Image (cartoon, rainbow, N blue to C red; front, side):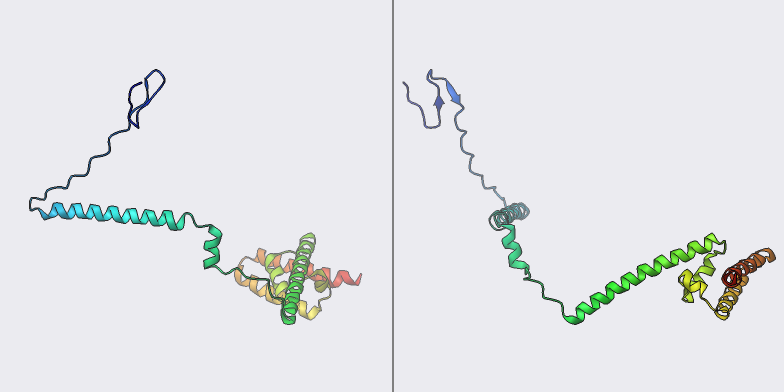
Length: 192
């Protein structure tokens, strides 16, 4: 058997299996400046940029990447302990907020029922509905228990608002008929 170098691999027949290791890269040749400072400055800036990039890469590899994310979070963010129990005042406030939400849902339901009642009885006009709501008439029970003087105040206000917007006699008559129908439903039909 012949002698082989350390990087030379051959099979049992002597055929080379792996190519030999490449020769090491030649040392970089220092450029000659020939008195030109701009070439030297360009070369120096390339070297400095390379060193900075290498340092940044090393910092990323050694500091950021191997660190477990939980340990980073624990260092910068406080993880609170158990929640404190609410005071009596806070409990009452929470209860009042819940009661307010229930009341709001109930009023919304009552307003929808009032609107449906008005539509069913053909006395619905959005502006009239809004004036009733503004005057705290938010349900059919409140509308049916409305006093005649209060109804007349609401009717006058609605009529004045609508007449200021409408110039046609035909439209004004429709508004008067609407109010008469509502008055009939509330006061005349109630007696029967």
